[in-house]
Amino acid sequence: MKDQLQRLLETAIDRLRRQGLLPEQVRVPVRVDRARDSAHGDFASNIALMLAKAAGMPPKKLAERIVAAMPKDPSVRRVEIAGPGFINFFLDPAAQFAIVRRVLEERERFGHSDIGRGRRIHIEFVSANPTGPLHVGHGRGAAYGASVANLLAAAGFQVHREYYVNDAGRQMDILTVSIWLRYLERCGELVPFPASGYRGDYVRDIAARLYRQMGDAYRRPAESVLEGLPPDAPEGDKERYIDALIDRARKLLGEQAYEAIFRTGLEAILADIREDLEAFGVCYDRWFSERDLVQSGRVEQALALLDRGGWLYRKEGAIWFAAGRLGDEKDRVVVRENGQITYFASDIAYHLDKLERGFDHLIDVWGADHHGYVPRLKAAIQALGADPERLEVRLVQFAVLYRGREKVPMSTRAGEFVTLRQLREEVGRDAARFFYVMRKPEQHMDFDLELAVSQSNDNPVYYVQYAHARVCSVFRQLAEKGWQRDVAQGMDALTRLTEPHEQALLATLARYPETVERAALQREPHQLTHYLRELAGEFHTYYNAHTFLVEDAPLRNARLNLIDAVRQTIANGLGLLDVSAPESM
Image (cartoon, rainbow, N blue to C red; front, top):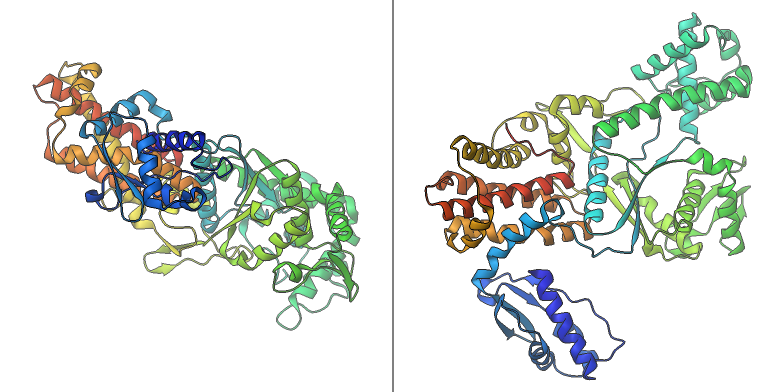
């Protein structure tokens, strides 16, 4: 109905333009919103206030002209102009029943729209360093990013999902050395494990696999590994020690052997991450390698572009980007004194690559601890000659897992964490996906394991899925009685759905398309979870208060059509969250 009213207003405005009452060049999106107070109608628009200045007339007078130019529509009982120029719509009571027909005609497409038609959006999310398995903190970013991508696709945008593999930095060297030292343990060489190494059992597993494949090929004496190294923590500097250990590994192994160990670790962990995400319902169009970006020369090309624009300078042996001139709090190093490029330099090249691929809008989903990184990247995009508003960064707080009242530590380096796989196995994919997106991404979240596995009305995903299963059970009971549903008869009898519970369901069903649209445009899948809980609650109340399989066939079929529309809408909404809609529970 909202779309229908928008079209009526757009037609009226076009008529006024042809009459010369509105300038042709003035274009303002027509918005129609649900009225907050039913006394003011069912829907309202402020379009007259938005166009009044361009039209050169008071908003109220323009509103009168717009209303007079609107085509007649049987669904609209009357139109009123209120306040300074709001246009309020009062619908014909019979119009509310049209939503049932629409749901049952559109089925899986109900809620989809074309508001994003012709626009390409790139969304990058998760992109965790391939230095260990995904933990429950990463799961929230995965669920959020995937749900936003689904919502945008439902709104008609062309969505490209991408994972940026950080496989070119120092952390990967630390992982490589960690695997090699565990491998040396297998060979019988006793080398103290560094304080900055990755300690998880997964490192031992990769080292064991490497030993089975290569035997003693990469074995080097412990004395040669340790000779002349600076002290590790706590006596010394752990970061200086690990860097020295990386250099020693490269020299003792040679680049070919070092690269082989590097590849073994990267491929094993990346395969584990990919498997985890796919089992979690998260799939990508592309896995983009930072290493490939660096080796292709794209980073140097991006820096050269910045240099030609006068945005780079040398200081203290390093190369700096003048981010402070473009809104960042200070300038940033892009090439260190030793000639190594920084993570930031790679990110600049990566985002230039995204822009050059022709995407209209870029969405990056990052952990909340990266908030300070946003201004410098926007500054770089501006320096590259693009509109920084084309980049949108959504920050996601890590979820905190509790076992009872005890908080579970989350440290990838120390190996003390609960993996996303363990969480999925314990509470199930459906509960994890739903729980992760129930709140705004920037809000703190405590993940309640006990609630997630409970089969009670307090468990929101169970409550919504149970509504879907209950509708399915009604149709099974219909078959058991030997009755058949007459959809056409039910459509003709929809006006008999006058009970308050039925009226509430009709009104809530009508809100689904606008909920999907709003959730997509505002990047807020929690709006959809709230809607589904509300719709499920209204259905459960209806189910407990009324009998659907009554002897009165027209009324029975009308009610069956209504609850089938509820079932379809719940299935569609859960589908956008990658949550299943079970037929029995």
